[in-house]
Image 1: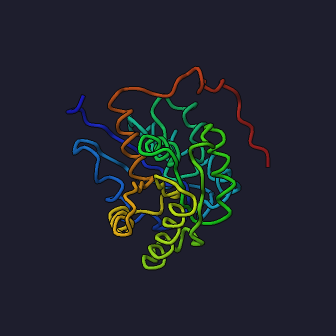
Image 2: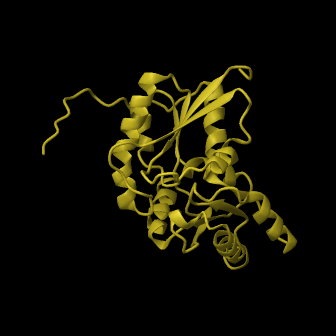
Image 3: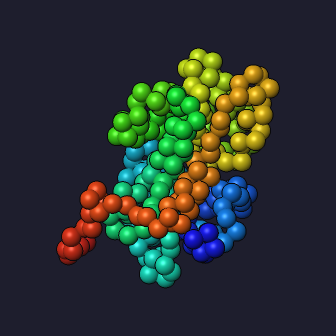
Length: 249
């Protein structure tokens, strides 16, 4: 199966223009096999500019499912990555389509669990924390994911590299020193291209701690599941019953 071409779909679940830069695409895809191809699309219609709350996530979810379904009519994708750590519409899309579907949360967290006993998440804003605490609780991982720290930087300002790295370094150190975490997970797929520098800076301070980017982890796990030919269980993600959809103004 290693020589099989795999086609993945990356759905960006926001409507902000230019939010997925070429460098971010390259960062996410750099560890994929050469015969894995990735198409990138944004949701159409209405949706949030960015996802920084439960409200934003709920606003994005219907468009994620709609976009995934529409794109599958044009090409037979082997897997879908919903490009957000909040996993908007992921479970619904798993019900709708018979292929691997991941958001940013599960792949990064599950990979982190194999690297250390305690995991810390570093995300963008305080608004995101309740949403991520809910995701941790639903996964039954409260004893392993022990802290969630914030940068105080909105998603649209993550392109300010100096501000990002300054705040990120501070919060990563606090997570290690004060919260005693052994693995760090970036809790926003917009935090990208930071692993090498952050790992190096922490190691210089005496902390040999893995740092995981959600986008990279999600792309790799989606690719792996696609190559294994496995998809979500229909015992959990049951196909929705056919029924008329009524649009009332």
